Image 1 (cartoon, helix red, strand yellow):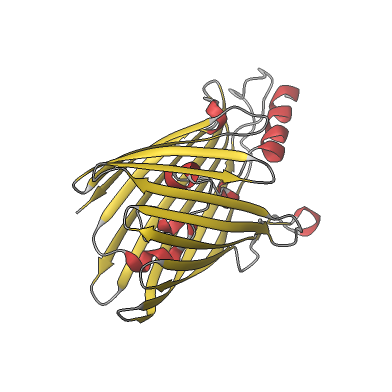
Image 2 (image 1 turned 30 degrees about the horizontal axis):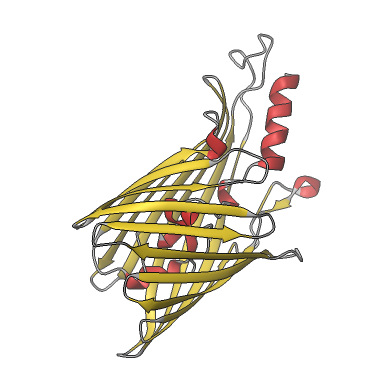
Length: 293
């Protein structure tokens, strides 16, 4: 029982929860989360729903990896975006993070997201978009250790669920300058009640994206947990070597982290790989596949 309790405590202190994982997708990992204002992509629903307004075809993406390379911390995600007549640009996303001890699942966090993006204004020179995301978050705990000490005859523990709302804005000028803002959990959703009530993290991201030439995109952004005074600065770039291969990289301060990745594009399909360092823990590797129709 003591071993199980220690592991769960470490998870809550060290590792990111689904509700506040800024490095979820392969693109975000490679660019250390600086891609707030980038052009719409498979993964826009996770880092700025206003990017959904740029979607012009049906696409889906699936990816995942082990956080910090630990096999007992698997994380996966799935997204699907589509422009639907009358309704507009719709996105659906799903995330899952598990904490395991061998074959025993100690904790499972899942988030189902439904997003909507639309243009408030668009002409030949400029564009202003807004996006919304509703998230249903569920946290399930496994069984207690029990008399056998491995959870096989333990007591089923409780689960928690909550709904959060996110909002994003994106302004574009001449397809070269882009400015984005993204706030998650604007409704200050919380889990628990009474003295155990805990408000989920609320995060503000703001960034700019500059495209000096057609095959180079540069980004800089800041991130701050609302209620906290510390600010993280991030910078990244994405460069298309040719029509098939893209290279992505990024750096972050406070703490210092470095990201790198590459993407192989074949017509409307893509395979991407990304990694991100940590000043103390091992490197996180992730791979994803994208399909467009």
